[in-house]
Length: 140
Image (cartoon, rainbow, N blue to C red; front, side, top):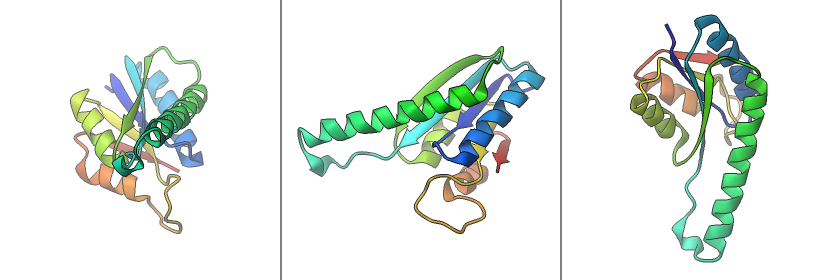
């Protein structure tokens, strides 16, 4: 039923819980591809060189660390695991990946590492739910 699962992560505890849930779902559904995506904010162009390159490298390093933690949380699954780091708005990036790869379900944490606190559901997960081309599983 869910041949391709899209797991959106940001390094938060909810994202790691989502990774474990995506892993269980992939095993139960005999998923073919488990795609793990992390999005990072655009680097402002006014930084100029060499600051811009340093900022890009730092963001890519942080994104890779988040992806590796998610892969570890997923553990051993028979699905092929693919990872992507995308620059841009998190919700928009997740939605674009879901559409492009025709994901069957998106698994995402209820709250991320965003700046706002006290919300029951994070703004990224709210936007994803509102505009997703497929079912969305939100994990606490």
